[in-house]
Length: 124
Image 1 (cartoon, rainbow, N blue to C red):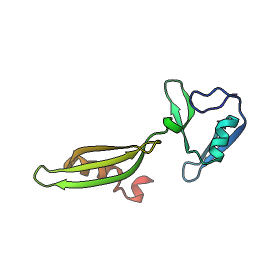
Image 2 (image 1 turned 90 degrees about the horizontal axis):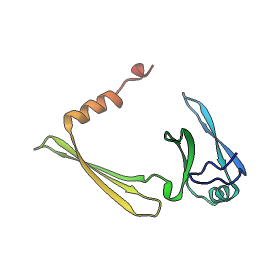
Image 3 (image 1 turned 90 degrees about the vertical axis):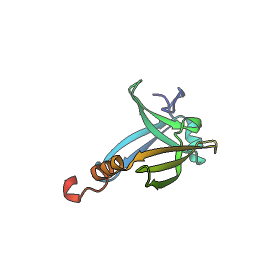
Image 4 (image 1 turned 30 degrees about the vertical axis):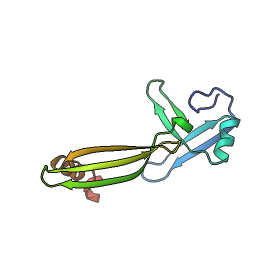
């Protein structure tokens, strides 16, 4: 068995069991080589991702990590009946990307009603 970190084929040195608590209890093993486990022990961020093209779960670290959402702003445009959305995404190296887009209010309302404003009875 080899390390699950993307593009690493070193032998396994540590297996970390990741557990999800809640209604969908599950667990999965994250498999690390000695070098990558040392980085995790030193505080390196990591996440697991299922790679459909190779049909297996990999561990993402360093430059392979997805950007993190650090800021989200919303501004309503009454004249054009939309909500301007601005997202700030921070990459592993500290650089930031700003993404701006408009969402028509009727589409936003449909999404919120369908996905967020459901009652507990609807989830049962």
